[in-house]
Image (tube, rainbow, N blue to C red):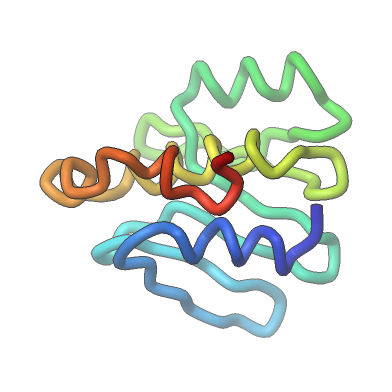
Length: 119
């Protein structure tokens, strides 16, 4: 997986706000941050539940690493060269869902079917 593929997946989500920094890009939905992208290292940071963060890192430490915890959430670094598009799409949607207001999430019920990696 490459950065352009990550951005294609990101483009399927609604109301994503992108902010550029010298070293990375960050992504929010209605002012709540849910992800980062570092082009130099070809990694992304995604908001997850604490249990999901622990499970991902324990299962595949060569692909996932703990970034930090904040506000009851665990952020995980994903090495893009070690993940398939469908798995990244699920993690990306979950990160977005954890930050988006309920009514916005409810307005996108078929995201999995509309995802760029769907059938």
